[in-house]
Image (spheres, rainbow, N blue to C red):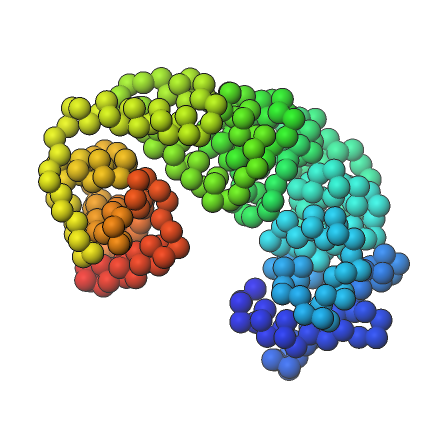
Length: 367
């Protein structure tokens, strides 16, 4: 949903005398009907067909002024938190959980499976028939060959949010019986263990994987982990090192970082670097020695991208920190391949904004 529309609706929504929420779409466009959202008590007792709510209406994520807060407070906390994990189909999932005890149980045991059921195409009667059937049959409908392991895996998931990229990771694992066989050996699967399994299946069940599955994590930590492992795998391949075993034997990501830097130093001993001087003005690096120099500044193996077709490496200073941006030209337009700031860190929101503005200028110059 458009952010401006969400803000306007949040400001002008109405709660009626029986606790329902009315979203006044007709005030914006007379051709549209207002949307009435039942109260939690009404969802529990009403027998009318469940409405076809807009999939992207994330009412549980809106800022809570007094009217919406009253509607939300009637919903049990654990149900509200479980439904709010998802970016789409929140109201449909909430209404099904209120009406059908079997769906409520599924939401408690395997929230992703509950969401998949209500998000799939079909009628309410078809979903209810599936809900009353075997869980293995439901998994088979989603293309999962190892149905029992699939159910176990979904019950072991412990996620703070379930965004589209995370759903894609879940599907990657569900559709691979070997991944599932390894994942169900873990007592819990958090977002880091899930991301690792989806991107690096050779590490499933390793010491590193088992440790990560027990740690608290946030989305940015997962992104940093994937970036570090991508860098380590690429560097190890260049050195001819057996990467999966060496990385898997690490206990923590700090150990992976130390291993990665050891491999970097081994590579640097074979390469010559220039005396690269960076300023706040972006400069395109032209020579291998410059690539190596920036690699040493940032602990990033930029030299592997030297003379790659259609790719350019640019660098500048953001304050005292070096910024490296690898771009690729395709159809007369540059796109970002990789960004790093400081010592091989993912870019901050401020640096990302700077790079996006710079990229617009780069594309404009090339027209």
